[in-house]
Image (cartoon, rainbow, N blue to C red; front, side, top):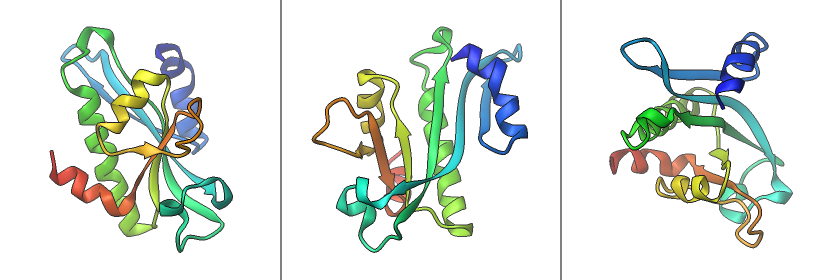
Length: 146
């Protein structure tokens, strides 16, 4: 994850393919980061709550990466990033519309971690699929629960 941040975050921003949000410590070292970009999901691959009344290409906000430095693990910076991501999604939904926030979890532990925030599996029948989503209509309630 560190290598990606050093090598590709700036490149993705300049190419308008992903924006990277960073939290630094008092010495300006990166403690956590997340990347966001717009995406669309093929309606035929999505569960009913995500596609009901939606176009064939469902607009969504993609969390491409979310990482925290091991030295600050357990301090809640990942949770703060999720709060920021969801707040950004609320604002973007008002301005441009998006149906959901989607994430592809890095592994099974990350998959369970995202579910704590209300994210649900994109494909519940496929245990190897680590994609999750949170409907835009549920985001504000999720934020209120914090």
